[in-house]
Image 1 (tube, helix red, strand yellow):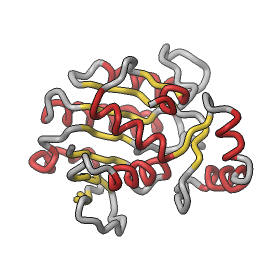
Image 2: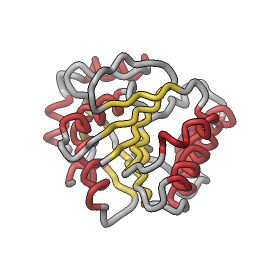
Image 3: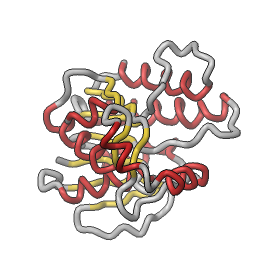
Image 4: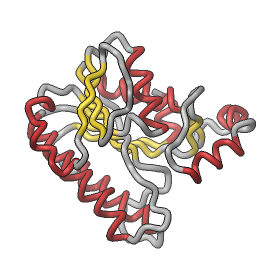
Length: 218
């Protein structure tokens, strides 16, 4: 499988990258990043593009993909809805639309989040925007699946780029393994997310929106 990974430097993306590297079925990982990450592996081809809006320049390198694991995103903290939507909706849907056009029938897996609002009318700004993004991606002419994980336990050595999340994960680190066992429907880990993505890329899934319990079941 030839996998396109977005967000390889983030917490979820780092975990997904590890699983892709370990999977014999993955022949190449095309990592699309805004700045070099320093990752060196024969299976990884890193493409640096400061502005994802210029994705058309990379079209020849982004054909013949088996799947796209979209793990990129930003926190809505202190952002206006317009600014958050520009990154979360406009950029994501524009990029995904291009990928679907270049790779008919490929699989797109988008990491959203627990509490995403599919109605697009709720009180939570981030949940509305994520819901609008999910709905647009599900309407694209490709096999699209939405991941809505709740709490995610990072693998050893993996950290979030977001300061608030780093603080919370450090605070909860001693309890997270216990919570994962006690609440398997609400807590997952970066390795499980990566393995679930690979399973769907190979075999698909019965539902197109997957909550934590669905991710852990794959």
